[in-house]
Image 1 (cartoon, rainbow, N blue to C red):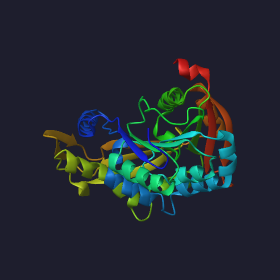
Image 2: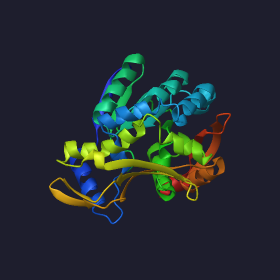
Image 3: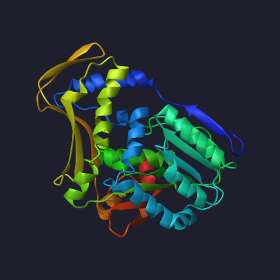
Image 4: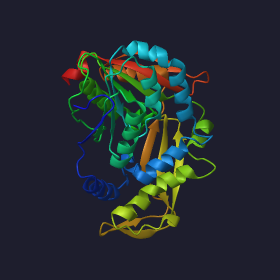
Length: 329
């Protein structure tokens, strides 16, 4: 167990290269081609997403940060002294730092992310900036079940932190499954703080995912660039485009890579056929009302304790507590 101010690193991930290869080949063989959005976040993809978060059109990051900064002391009071903060997707720690500065004597900071290098660098920086805080970095795919290593501070709550509206990347039934997994990870009485993007005008949402500088397009197409780099692909990126739009009926942003012509490509030694106008699904981003998300959380076994929003009702941050039903599932 690390002493105060030290960094421990646990790699619980499977062979990432093999899983990426299998997911790509399986996804491109489907009638509706699709690749899981978690594979957008290699080192280059993570760097591009960091740029997206600073774009004027992309409101979620700055709005959520504003909510956290305004309400950090109340949130810290709710979590109590000596909690263990488990940061799911903790390869970028900016939002967690807001909480760490407000929490009373947190017993541990536990960032969890699949991007090994990005996670390690971020965790190392937190350990340097919070010299009395044990930092326990866990490289794992947090979208599925995993076990945490032993953590210090057995008396304090386990508090899950899932910012950035990443919950919207799951279809609603999968979001319930994910939250139920979180409840089991945190244990009975464990709590969670989660960022959720709110439903709003279509034009605001469409602009947020189609920025004028084209950074979001580069982020999406980097998935194919990654295939070329890691899976011996010969995809010509100039023959594909980023496509994103808000589906009002389903309450979600849909993001695709669209083929601009009939074409063939090779990926990991296999021939893949793309038709003109064919869409390869990369990501959904579901939006919720406050009531819709509270109901979803309850179905997953959480009690909805509080929610904070910005004045324009663009974004929300929810405080949940794990109840018994999810723990028995």
